[in-house]
Length: 184
Image 1 (cartoon, rainbow, N blue to C red):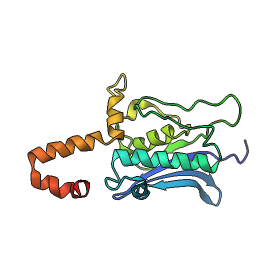
Image 2 (tube, rainbow, N blue to C red; image 1 turned 90 degrees about the vertical axis):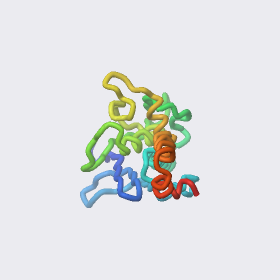
Image 3 (cartoon, rainbow, N blue to C red; image 1 turned 135 degrees about the vertical axis):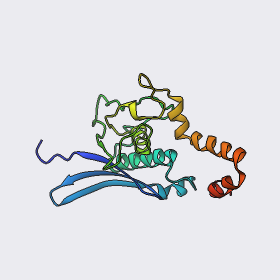
Image 4 (cartoon, helix red, strand yellow; image 1 turned 180 degrees about the vertical axis):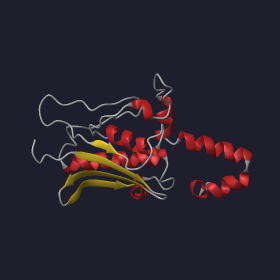
């Protein structure tokens, strides 16, 4: 239809933050409908590790809930309540508006399996947005099927915990230097 906006889930990862935005293009420039930054996560209890997979997931979840709240769709589409790491797609309701649809935009980032941009995607989908995706790029994809425990572990920071335990046993000084904010 004429002048109907196509929305994009724009994911940008810097050295210190993860940025998720819902953007539509217009003639005068891009219009941002909603945005979330991982630097906001300390308000919700996540104090450190603001660029890892878990923070990317939480930022995607935050932008999804903000978008649906702004469009008054938050009661109609609650999202995924139990985080299992498995494939999840938002089902349209029989009555009322359809789910909010957006497309992933990762910019110049290379789409490699297990990358943090797909953590943002998983968070946004679990938050209730309708974003077409394949589970091939999530951690745990072996070429045929997805091992759902690995993405779930990434969502809850299990991979960081494993590395912390490894580093604590192997090199105590490096452990204290790298994870000083986690320990305190």
